[in-house]
Image (cartoon, rainbow, N blue to C red):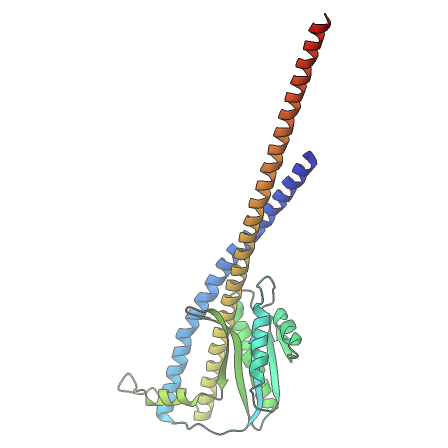
Length: 300
């Protein structure tokens, strides 16, 4: 019985140590998500500036939706490089695989962010052309976005003549629904977006002017549009990844607390049994001693 109590005590101490680790990971997930959330909101202001530049450009040079043949369709999937976030990568990979079944036939290129996402996509029968490391900090989001923008430039030059279609797949937050997988199309530019920007009156009396050739100016605006969108997607993916990890750690913490409560109950029961056994031993010894004394008196 003593060995059983010792074993229960060891298991209880081990569970407490694991709970401490889980609690630390949950706290780190909350701390890590905050700067990424701030970055996601900050890039929105920059993206609005880029769209304002588009608006000014369209007032000078109206653009019609061009029916340019698509030479390559590019999909960039933002996932995780670390585990302990539940089925985060698997759910997004399944969503991507389902969405690709509705895509038109033609050449495709799949770029992936995160080793865990690469494995999830491979399990779905999708082979990424290249896997990039996700940012380790907020400062790395800009590095990753610049790298992806350069990759898109390389692909565009490789498939010329023709145009490329660019889409982003990542988890995004949605009010009332937690986080949901989303695939956002960036290129070709949305005709509805161009129409809205063209139809929106300019805020001041004078339109801004520029000295760059119109074609170069348009390409620069498109590049910044891609950069800001990928920056936003990378930051949002990191926020939702940490949220998924925090949720998983909360579940693990609750499970450990339930297990500890059960172990505490077992230890109390074992201690009570030990106390009861010792009391019975005392009572039996006392009764035996009492009986012995009575026999001795009778003999005398």
